[in-house]
Length: 391
Image 1 (cartoon, rainbow, N blue to C red):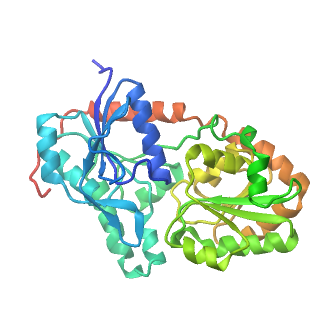
Image 2 (image 1 turned 45 degrees about the vertical axis):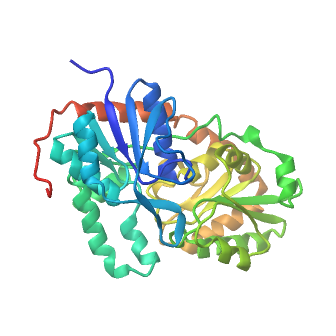
Image 3 (image 1 turned 180 degrees about the vertical axis):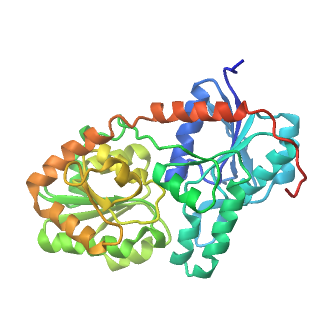
């Protein structure tokens, strides 16, 4: 007989209030699964700015040992905790463990679940093997990929945010892939949140065109190309303004190099929605995303978007109809698309209306209902046999 709910242990090395796609996704998932009656416990690295044992109406948080990521203090890396998790789960056994990140904490959670015979699933949300090339560790590309494959193939199912990525992972030897798409909060991210006083604070007049970008300011986000695109936009339309929302290791350097731009730092999500809606264009230059929540949030906010034809753009953008999507191997095409949006007022206006329509059906309710069904199925597969601690 199908159970009405599951006791879920969600293990993640990034979670709100941290601001990134994975943290946001699992913050929403934990909240919504809790509202659906499931007992959700979130195991995440302890943060000094959060009280120990912090709880929420929909889920509980269990703080775990962790350290700030070198050169990236905004995020924390969990430490291995297999023994601690085994003891906790032996005493209060979850029906299912879901591992959202493949760091030391996530990998040790897979081991702990397998030792106890608890069904365990995982998510692939970050192309860590691709990041090695952006941080001067290209020689580690293959070992990192092998590690990721090892972690995920020890779980019953690996969820990825697009069918395209599922196929890529299967070609790389990942087994049991399944789709966990990402929703967009179309109530929060809405054109009606446009605020003229906010535009004025950026130095933008009503007739000015504001380009916005939101995200982690890190090497893998392709900021060199992003600023090349902005230079072309400003050359074509001197009334362009560029607003960058977010923080990260590159922020101070970018701010020094581009004093003409507005750098806001991190802002709360409600403010982020106002920032999106108060702009006109969103340019997405990254090629390392597994999805790219920022693109769908920008579209929901009624922005004309330009990006490479993969991940969220491939799923939602119809070139020339609701946005501009260019081939991934043609960076100059992205520069050209950005300049076109800066100068063609009619095209920009048409794309802004169509962008909102394109993502209105991508609700979190639909995404989470499907994920809930997949988790219930995984939990009902029966106990996995207990294995040796090093398996």
